[in-house]
Length: 62
Image (cartoon, rainbow, N blue to C red; front, top):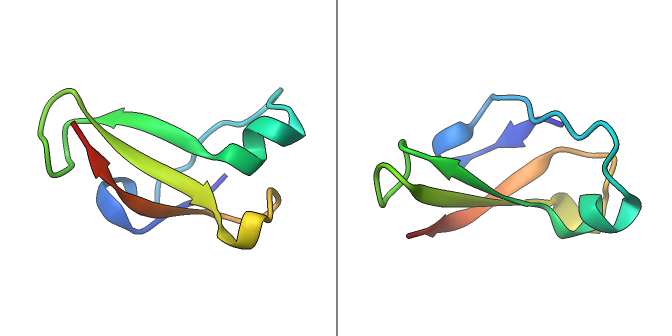
């Protein structure tokens, strides 16, 4: 899955084996590149709840 925007822009997320529900929810990914530095997380979610499209960055969280 392509990640669009935010600190992980352009990277790919392996979603092999994810259920439809998991794909619809998106992902909270640990990254040291975000607003909160090491240990922070970036939230990515499918655009318009389309689990086949890219994940769009929604923001960072500690």
